[in-house]
Length: 140
Image 1: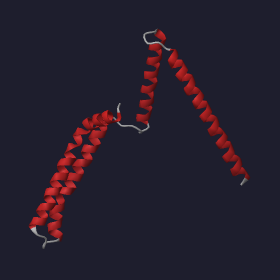
Image 2: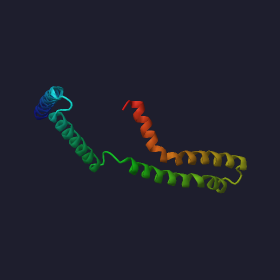
Image 3: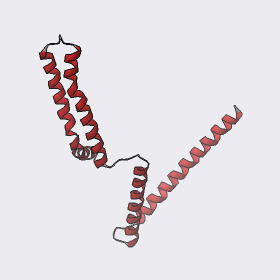
Image 4: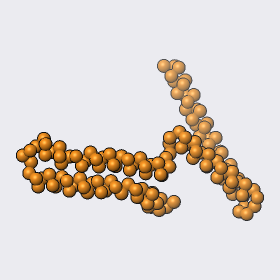
């Protein structure tokens, strides 16, 4: 119990200290950024360095699998949608085989709903438009 308590206090102190350091770094960055004037060489150097750091962070996140390119994401979604549409299209036939007494009108209703769902799944190609809509809604 003593070791666990000591460990907890040590982790808590480290967490508090890290938070203080993060705030101090953020304050220093804010102060440094406010000293920069657009058009000066220091400002342009700062912008370039920040852009390079952001690009590297994005590459690292992509390498770690935390983010996906929109094209890859769209490709994956299209493949999944195609597989699901294939499975759904077989449902009416499976229902007819398993339940031969089922009315044709019921099968037709199922077919119609599956066609609607498959049509909706085909709109996965619009993911880039949806992304733009999302960003606009978020104010980006």
